[in-house]
Amino acid sequence: MSSKSPLEQCVIDALDAYFHDLNGTEPHGIHAMVMLTVEKPLLQSVMRRAADNQSMAAQWLGINRNTLRKKLKEHRLIK
Figure 1 (tube, rainbow, N blue to C red):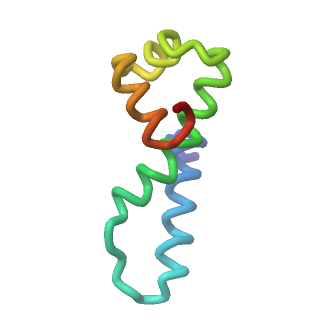
Figure 2 (figure 1 turned 60 degrees about the vertical axis):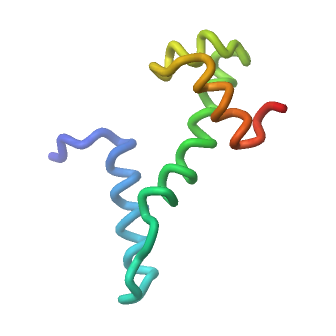
């Protein structure tokens, strides 16, 4: 049995599919691609669970509230 969390296994499976779909083409910028793909839904989910309370969401995420606001703006989740 795997010791990986379901989320970790999901990421592994998604990346395996991504590499398969490249069909031998060399990938570029994978880290940025994954971070951009994962960060927005992470922020949306945490903000929803925290009832849009940025202080609470920042605490849950383990980041500074100002950093959270910056990320929310970058992803156009707030103005």
